[in-house]
Image 1 (tube, one colour):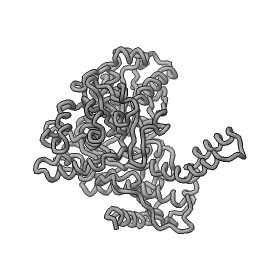
Image 2 (spheres, one colour):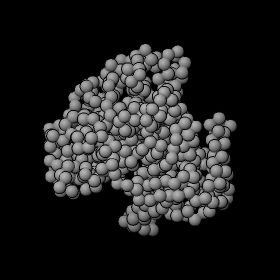
Image 3 (cartoon, one colour):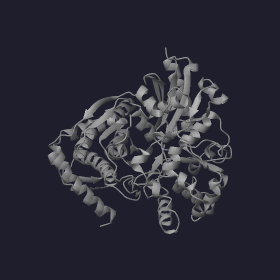
Image 4 (cartoon, one colour):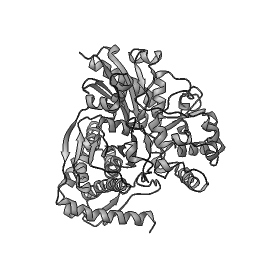
Length: 555
């Protein structure tokens, strides 16, 4: 019997999931999800102003409940759990004190959104991102955005810090340092009390914080000080070195070992981002595009150092040595809205109906609650079924998938969604179908950009909740890309990928490629393009591109 298990801890936008995995074969012995209660209640967020913040208590409570849950349900001997690796959304930084503790856990800051985690989808720093881009191109020195596609996004580290520092003097003065979500949780697990010596994630730093070895780590004070003296001062309280996620961050602290019921010998690997862990869990190889599909998408590839050389891929979210597979260059692109676009439409359709149900006197409260729950559970399924019955040849509505801005190609978070060609026959299913086509067209723009930049794509793999659940989305995507799309078997590919990193950090497998080979869950479905739909979507895609140009240029 193997008796060597690892835990992958996957933090998404809405919940955290822990999986307990057998390192000999990748079998998931137990899985548990914790939905963030404060986030679910809408606390600390203001969608109208693009502010999305999360309280670290949601994450710490979820950490404890999910890990204890998988240990209890699996019944394994806790001493056989050899390692843990954390993956999170990103860039999702938070201000911390001199001991690496979140300001939101300190007196006076408990209810201050600026002291909390600035979630990836928070776009309050659009102005600051624009400023970073302008200065990077005009200041006369190195363009520090060049390894991040040449365009810095409001979704990323420096823009968010700069915005909070300008908006909230109290948080600015109290913040000794800032940590990405994946680094904060990892530091908590090992009991780190020094943000200056803690091993920061290469993935997070390289893709979102302008870190690169060629200029000695983070951009110099000379550059950062052009925006605010605070950023130049902060640089000394951040980091210089970064580490890949096959490396050991430390051992589980006595406090967390006791709280979780694990051994202090348990290794904790360096943290990473969910999409990059998902790419590992989805068996990434060179020339394969991994699409991690959830509320947004991350489109991840790897290339050998010899293949990519000195080439800079324009308009993506970075190219970083070791961010996915240590020893290879990780390439990241993505869409700011994917499942979120469909969720927006669901809320648009459902909310007025729910308000009417809540106000009616014709049914009991129990019947109201049951009816509302059924509507919320069924509406996307019903819309999808109706949309599947609409022939592709009838697709006339053209939508843009920029409801949450555009991540790639060419980040522009100030862009807005739009819909055209509506008429009296444009019912909910047809509009919904057009939104599914729009997110698929957005995916095609990314594929085209990679190919324009000389990056070969031979295969596409889909993973995540949308890939597993939506036949409509996956078939539309296959038709639009005119490529087969394999769907990863694992329901928890990011958590599985994190578990693979953990197995390497613990010395159970010699490297990430070996861990993938031993622990892979394979694929359970392939969506083949329907030949009759391909030319229809080629024409509609051309309209999407032209419509996008009109909206972006303000015409």
